[in-house]
Image (tube, rainbow, N blue to C red; front, side):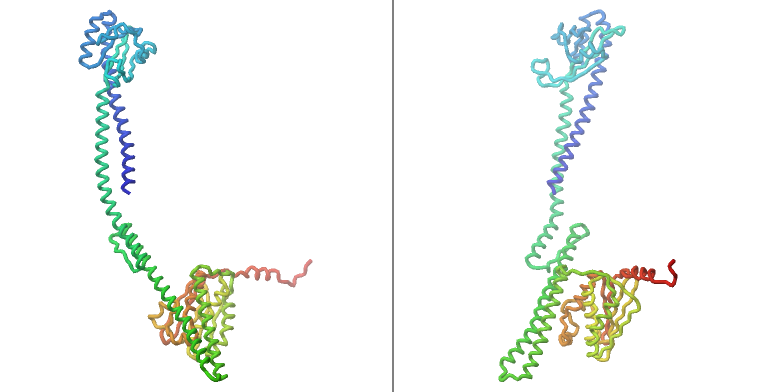
Length: 485
């Protein structure tokens, strides 16, 4: 993180420094050019009468005096570019072909300037930048000469170099400050992240009981709280998994133990009593059925958990499915001396898997019959409300204690363990019912009072009657008494 910030700051500083140097350099150069051209123009005006009279001595004295004052080398050239007077007396009589001279002599410009890097063979220091400034000397709008000033740019380049050095020093200082501040804040930021990482590693080693201690409301604290929520959920899932394995093992072991005892009793019985043997084999058969039911429910739960359970969705008349299921359960209710009272005043169509939804109805009504004493009543009501089909299964049986209500859909949970095993329950029925209802986009809830009875309520989304259009077409096509012409 610090390296990224340092890189970004370096790039930003480079861009800003480049811009500052360009703007500052351009300003200083433009200012120098304006000053030098103004000075050359003044010199040209002053030299005009001497050039007209060809007074070389006066021109030389003037150039030497002005050159000493300005520190520049001054030259007076004729209209053809030949040097008449040189303040250093080195180029007298030479014809100069510099661009600034050509601009005035050939291009008829009033002034011109340029910058050159002089070499060792030149009068100024090797490698130094100099400025050439030229101005026309005219008389009656006719060119009679050229004034040229050659001045060193060393002071200007020195100023730019100082600015550049100051910027570099400033950058180094800022970079060091940013580095120190960045390292400090980086340690402040990464410390809780490292703590959280250590907690995750500890969780991987010891389990999901580890918790973070988030402080504040920043992103790291939110991450810590999310970690705690995740750990708690995983711990609950781990506990549920262990309970599930423990309960499943117990449920599978119980019928196996019973069968083992019965078989051992038969093995040690001499001679075999046919009546006793038949009773024992009947009991073994019942335990096998119970074991098969447990394994079947476990496989169903596994398919739900792995999301591999596929629903065969189709429009279903829930009232027809309800009465068909109640018809299958009527012998069970008759043996238990329980009255089943269905109530369905309207058609309710839902989209679902008929086998799975029949399992929901069967399990709820079967549970109500099992936990209702002889002479009791189970009411099954089906109606629509707010775009949903509502199925209620209410009994006046033993009821469920209030502390057990939140757990009735937990796997292997039994309110009355002894009675549940006596009635053949596996403790998985309601969990399967809840999973099926949720897969169909519905919801299930329970209300109960101990000693008064229990009501399970299933809510499923309604769909339109798929046969409505067919019925309308039938009615339109019905024969009439009118004669066909």
